[in-house]
Length: 329
Image 1: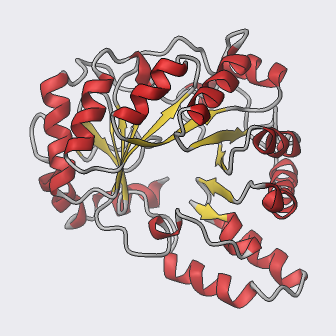
Image 2: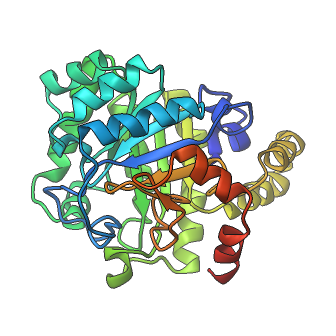
């Protein structure tokens, strides 16, 4: 994850400790269910491994183990996590364990009552997926009305005083809609936007969504331009996810602009140290399989029905298996 606001605009924010400071144990994405009512063109979950999802008892055991390894944050994702029947019981259990709990959602199931329950069960942040203008979003998510439902979900979260951000996946269908997303965030008083580079797995491997190099450069230039323009309008936590090369892109822009931020940003990137998957971030799928991150489901590190999280992470740390996997990728 590259902190655009910090590196390019010099704006410090509450997420810095997860990137440049001490953060304890790893961040863990828990894809708690494969259930989802949408049909997204880029979905990595739909074609993932199958099996029996962790039941309530097993999911609580996972959360206990995450607390034991001093997990910096657990991100409930899916599928659509709000389609899991016991989600609020798990969120409340996570809160009682002292875990920092966040939610990744399509927003379509969030109304005023749901938003209040999210707050009451200790969720500290909800990231809602919006992938462009209304027409683009609905086509991308495969459901008419998805955009309006996501907007209503964000408004409900904001009214409940739950910190909320926008998650945007960069594709060849929306790379030129960066300004529209910043404008939307500003209109909704949303301070945080995460721009995800497309990972061509699952449905995304079947659909023609990958940006050309020129399209990607246009998108990144737009993100940097808008991050500077909209910072004064409250959009001051802007990130890209999934390509550490964005750091070099930022440094080149800063050098070209003779920016005073160049040296400090260079040191921060050097301190961050590059890709953290399989080191500071892991993912657990709905069936208890542990992966280096939520997109690398081809790389299985272990299963929680057979070994504990600490055992799996220790084995991973002492093995060259993941390093070899990365070399082959």
